[in-house]
Image (cartoon, rainbow, N blue to C red):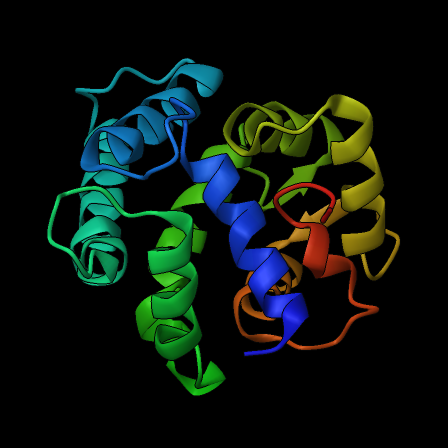
Length: 182
């Protein structure tokens, strides 16, 4: 695995470790889901809330939990980075591995249901879940808005998510999807 992907996975880990204890647990995934729902004012027991929890639970079960090499129910950055390098080796698997999660986040971020994510919507959701400051979200948003329309289409968002997890281009703005890389 190259250094860029390692840094991207470590950045994602920092965003996903919502309690900051140095490991991702099922509880972190639940809290991440709840933060997204809360940011949108969606009740957790609503159909959209239940879909979010179901999607994130599947992501925990199929992608994160298998990373737990020592089976202590805590996935460290090293465990996750190593597992992501294997799991996200083939971009052709994006549709099965990440697209459902990306779709759920896109739908939550698209608060007005117009089929696009505005800067305000992006900052609202990704700032709360990615633990990134508003100005950082604005910089990332502007770079991801490939057609300079002032909104991210579903296609632009999927392109960014795919590039973040699978890509090796050091100049890609998608490298900063979850906040600036260190």
